[in-house]
Every structure is written in structure tokens, then in C-alpha cells.
Image (cartoon, rainbow, N blue to C red; front, side, top):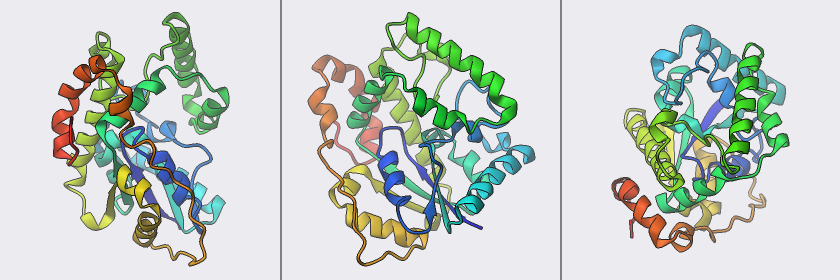
Length: 281
């Protein structure tokens, strides 16, 4: 039986690079797509936000999700199964009620850099290949529901200057966001993900959590990989070739955002930035 390690972090915080790096280690496996939102939403697909509670983890939901993890672990024959779905940053308590034995790797990143990066995703081009990679993990009974939702979202994008109806973790009801700019939504999304995760990890045994920042990781990747491997119980080969990881994105938000955009964003993220040891210019 595989041990489960779950990566938690707001979108655009470095969760993908963590997943790709750690899943390349010996005896570590993961899904062949970057996220499995449809598995996590089994039994709760009609919720308009991703902020699920332990009460949503019914026996049927727990059984289904745990079965999907066990199934992949057996297929891959690995000791460690790694998973990363950014929306889980809004529902760590829900996740932990399903996997009370799991370990977590929790990554944070400067809120300005994250907000800028999220904004780019709202107008990203559509990739059918990427969508189908995730879609194949839709529970059979949920295919009609998500098929209709997919068509609705495509229609919305066509009619609204190529802007997505919604991108990333659903931290609020759509009608609460309809009057907000992309800058404001992106900033609020980062705040919600970080604050909800912090609240949950304050209640979880620290021995089960490895915390790091994106900035620490990209400036000292070798040491961070060694630390995370030790946390996961993995023995690294001394001759291991470490991937090339660049730190050029640090500070990109402040450089690329206009003064008008910063005026909208900073009041939203300032408190969360300070609470998480980041300087808000």
C-alpha cells in the first residue's frame, strides 16, 4: 500500500514544479495529469464553491476517493503516491478527514507574484489535450453533468472576449464576483486559499506537514528536495541529477503590474502578505 503525500498551495504558487520534481524521484508516482478535481468532488459536484467541510466527506465519498488512490498506487507499484489539486487549499479539513494518515507539503508564494500569474490564466487559450487528460478521471456517473458544464463554459468564453467564466479554485459564489475586476478576483483568490490553508494547518500535527516558500525552493532547490525527500521517507541516490530550477519569476508581479492594478490589488492582499512574512510594497 502506498503512502500518500498531498501538495497544498494556492494556484500559481509553485505546486506544479513541486509535483513534477518530487514525482521524478524513485518510488514516487502520481496521476498523468496535473490535477484530479473531479475525483475530489465526487458526491459534491453541485457545490458552487470548492470550500468543502469534513461533513461533506460521507462514507460513500471517502470510500470512492480512497479507492482511486489505492487503485493508482497498485497500478504504479510505488511506495509514495503524490497528489496536487490547488482547490484543496480551500478544503484541507475535508481532505484530512478522508486521509487522516497523509503527509502534506504546503507551499506559499508572494501574493503579488501569484496574483499577477493568476491574472494571466484568466485569458489563457483553451487546450483540448490538457482538458481531456483531466476529464478521463471524471466518475462515470458524473460525465453528463461535467459535459454540460464544459459546453456552458466554452459558450461563455466565446461571448465574453475570450475571458473564462471562472478559473482556479472556486472560493466564492459566481454572483459575488460578477462586479469585480480580474485583478480583484485574482487577489481575493490568493487570500482565500492561503488563509483557509493556514487555519487548517494550525490544527494538524506539525509532524505531518512540511512547509516551504516558493522563494526558498527556487533559490535553494537541492536542499529543499533533500528535506522533502527525508520528510516523505525517501532515500536519495547521492549521484542524483537535480533539475534546473530558475528563480527569475521572483518579484515579477511588482515589476509587471501597473500602478493602477497595484492600487486595486494591494488593499486586498496586504494583511495576508504581512501575516505570512512577505513585504507588501
